[in-house]
Image 1 (spheres, rainbow, N blue to C red):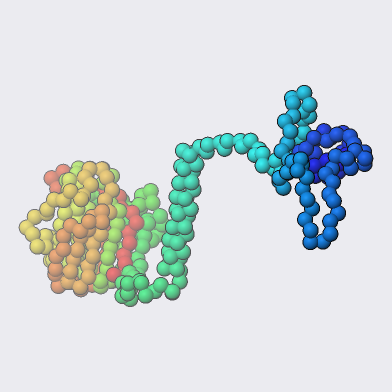
Image 2: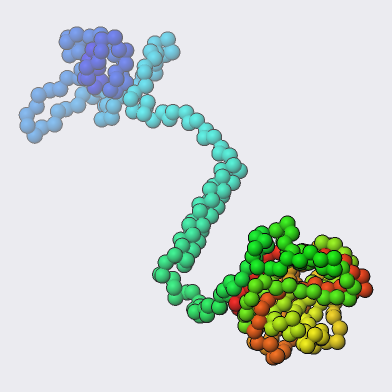
Length: 332
């Protein structure tokens, strides 16, 4: 159907023009001709005369007639209008800021910790196993190796034929006993000693484990160095009641070197116990140790070398009974 206002073609079923909005009605070519305003053909250069009774129309498009509700037909919105219609917006969910914040903080701390440990490990590896960072290491002086003592003699007394004397007398006993060497003195105020086959050492360090096996705590037990004969030697001793001293045997007489009497020490384990005795005879220096602790150090120049041995003694009460084991002689 042709719009009488704008002359545009519209669908046959339309009531309003889709281009100008004017009211559409059925018409034919004759009616259209009658309704359209006529124009007179004029010569060029002449303006047509306007009829007096003709109502002047504005050059603008005619105003749309008011459409009654009964005549109105619902029209779908134009495409441009549809484009301008905004779709409903779904409100964004609020994030859980508390959890997110702490999670990011923990992840950041973990990453920093891993990087720090990696750097420390890398630096430690270079510092200890590579020469790249040697300039950071303090200069260390070349250590002077200390002399290593060489073993001169050792006996654990497991072999009864290792060279020590074997005596079983009423007054004294010197013999192998249960993988140890047992010495018993049954006479009061008496000292007895024993030594292996003929040996002669100069500078030595002698060690032994001495255990009180019976008898009184007032006793003597110790080791001998530089034994010339039965009348000339040195020995270091301790007692089961806590006394010690370095003794010199000269011409059948005993003398405590550097002191008039024996002295006491808490390093000595008293009673029926085991004490580790050590006597160093180096040059003119004599040093006595017990259980790893130095007790006394004295000097004497009379005896330069000799054999080694073991010694025990009694005081007012006889019956001293001592077991010796792990006898070691080393060159310092």
